[in-house]
Length: 407
Image (cartoon, rainbow, N blue to C red; front, side, top):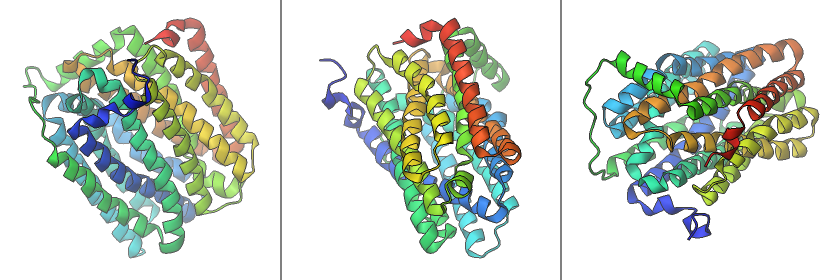
């Protein structure tokens, strides 16, 4: 039977360890997106500055640039579950600190920047371990499905979290959004501790961290397919996710809305991303992944450009669904295609490079987008960034056509 039959869409959930992971992560990710949404609106409410939205996003992403490659080395050296538990616990503590500052009315923009940097540091070490941890929970043949379901649970969080955050923020204030996020980490930490992993041993360090990092970088650069996928992922990270930083300002200044509008826009993007992830889970590891990658890449700038022209809330929500779908189609297939080409002994380091390219491009793009929007306005910034994505997309299609036919 082909892997695209409906019964195989959720095949990774047949593994007990992955079920624990899936449930724990959904709970935690709802809380994470509640905090992210509330934090963005709180920053804009305190500063009324597009540029400051970019500063916070940059502070959150700067550690990715600094530490993610080393985090990939560590993910290949120590048990990945242990690393994820440590980093998730750190994130929980930071959420409670932000909640206390908010409840006591002591919170200042610089507090949020510092906490964003510390959270980004935890993410820089957690992400390579989390990305490569999939191979320890499911068999290799079901890894593509598990990666797609990882995106599914991530996007359930993006659907539910921002919408709930908008309601909770309007009703009880930002502090409760941060508190709920802190509590939600208990679910994923408990799930990790309950897992029964067999035969997963830490790899002994036979080389220095620098030499192991160099080995992973050389492999990534020399693999033409992986290099091409990562370069285009960086384009989406910089220009695509950079634009999403402007959503709180867009909700207020362009659409004339409020914190609830901001939550709905982010949730609409989450709906589209969820649909994209489910589609890839349904397709499985068939021969269409390269085509899905190409379609998602091509339509992302088109949807963003249309979004810049639309200033009505219902139509904007529909466009955010489309943007979420196209971006996820591109990102998810990139992840699956790279992991299918990587040997296990290099997986953590290569996924460290993946995380650096994707998550590292976003904060720099957010900083540039925020500063640009302060100068030329949000709609002009969206048009400019969308044009850049389309330029790189067409260049890739012309000079690297084989990427569209990857399986």
